[in-house]
Length: 238
Ligand code: CTP
Ligand code: MG
Image (cartoon, rainbow, N blue to C red):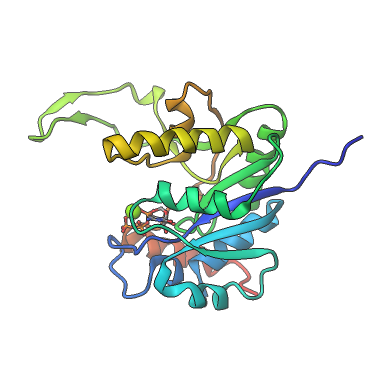
């Protein structure tokens, strides 16, 4: 029987974290003594990921390399200061050529505490035949659509909505083709997708869901960091 090739990942960390409002790039902000990007990389590895390419801000490459020095098979490359989508594209290029059916995950360093089981579920679903897989949770807030003046234009049925997390997982050929198509679209329209599965949807691909996890929260604003600090205090950071 042919050996299953190991999953690889792009870990996006090139953002500045303007909503968090720290001096440091967000992915270098400390959580229980280790930077967010370290926690995220370690979680991916524990979930079964081999090679991890980290997209970092151009001015902090050496700081990222130092922060990740004790994790093997991590490559730090310069991300984009334009968009997350452009950073992911640079990360995919750095992963080099992969087999069409290889599994690639895209994860945000802004989600440092994603349990390894979530990555494992995503990888398993791709290996079982899905081209694109996202971890999701039910939404608890009521959602509304609004127009530019703030007037409510509609109330989607909450039961039909889910909140989307990372890591998102893909067959290599599905993700690289979706990114190529997305790059030519965004050159025209100056828009970037907020997630990678959205690029697959835009080219007509189907996206499967698996169960996410509340601990996989995204550190966006100071309150999120406070919650992550509480959760990280219960985890070993060595
Ligand atoms: N990211 C990236 N390249 C960019 C922008 C974002 O690699 N040009 C990464 C971030 O580092 C983060 C993830 O994409 O891990 C999700 O982005 P977000 O949470 O919005 O982080 P920031 O863009 O850093 O935060 P903000 O939008 O508040 O500035
Ligand atoms: Mg951002």
